[in-house]
Image (cartoon, rainbow, N blue to C red; front, top):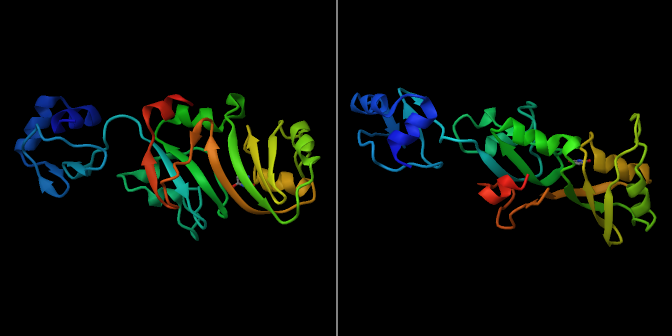
Length: 229
Ligand code: URA
């Protein structure tokens, strides 16, 4: 997008005002002062107006491959947060759409659009989240029915909503949840006398974790992925 359009859309100044800022040397792109309003800039460029960073216009929608040892909160003082992996101005202001534990890996969606985030996290919208689980002990066949019927978890007042459990090996399974209670997968396996050893989220709704993303890497979502939620 042209720089003058980018700045006008993001800052609220008119294109005429933006060009005036440029002439006055107030616009810096990737550490270089720019006076040409027609140069093209995008998400990956660092644009500053009068010393303040200017985000690309429009909302941000990101998928991140969460590595072990990172937290999905803003800052717990001990572990790095997933937002510190996002190389964008004011990344710390973005919303993380549903948390994963520090020892869980996989798909995390991050956005600037609060309404979109709500569709993912609110149980009312029933957005399925697919987890791949490795357990300490073999998983019995009857666990499938128990997960479907819902389980009473320690200290909770209501049974869990029906969850779809598919056994993939003796100690491995995939489970799809439509709610996101605290440590839910681990507590559901604890409720049937087992222990989760490894947990990985592979899909949210129809959005699959991109196989080309290494742990710690991220990419912007496609239009199709954004609209699928
Ligand atoms: N359930 C858990 O127990 N942990 C997670 O990180 C996600 C779901």
